[in-house]
Image 1 (cartoon, helix red, strand yellow):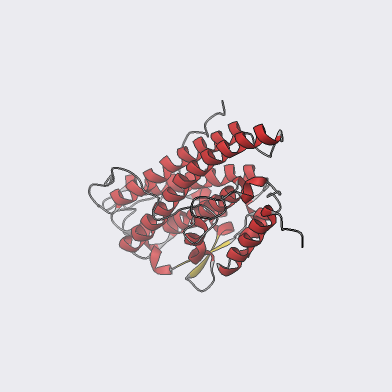
Image 2 (cartoon, rainbow, N blue to C red):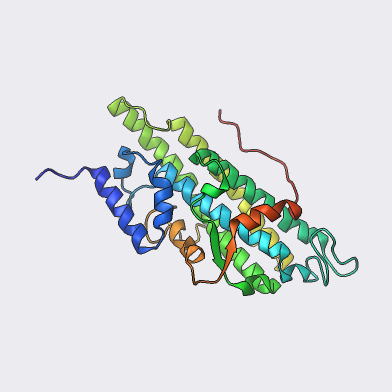
Length: 290
């Protein structure tokens, strides 16, 4: 009997994992862009298949869409009327004149805009032409999240810690893939979808997004008067060991938010349609590839 190609084995293992974690849709979104690359056969020291660039981009896009939906609903939900935000009767654009903190509101408005920009970049990398083509259009979050400040900030920290961990791992994985690809090109004389320079650039981009997600975590703590807001010497991977593959991946961490029955359904399309009315535009672009 002919031995099965290593890339086929890893594809089968990936599909089996996705089936058990109920995220087949995410797999389908990535499958059209994942070729029979030899990198799929590579293993990390733990034996988990190395994430491909497309897998990393896809997982990150789902995370950014979740963040967009989360921040939008925070800005329009009852929590915005907390005195630490827009205050009683206040809205993001019209805070209570005597009992509010407009600066804290601006932190959330800027975060919403920034998450949308990150998602736009990831769509470009994946060849997705509009948000309607994103893997997930609905996210499931407890409605209590947007009712009180303590509940909102608790989920904000949970999400941002996961995003920080995911982008930390992504930066490492892109650097690792750059080294693998350089060796592959030398030994096989074949060019893959991405050059080592491309992969090193993706690591740099991941690091720049990681920095902004870290700001979101700290500013969320500012809103809740959790002092010091910058309470960590180093950001952590939040228990993650990969972005896409394996039980301790960012994808596995996202599963509760994309599984029906785990909370109230919130629409990405609704969030994107309403976002311009509540976000604050910030500056900056991805780093230029050298």
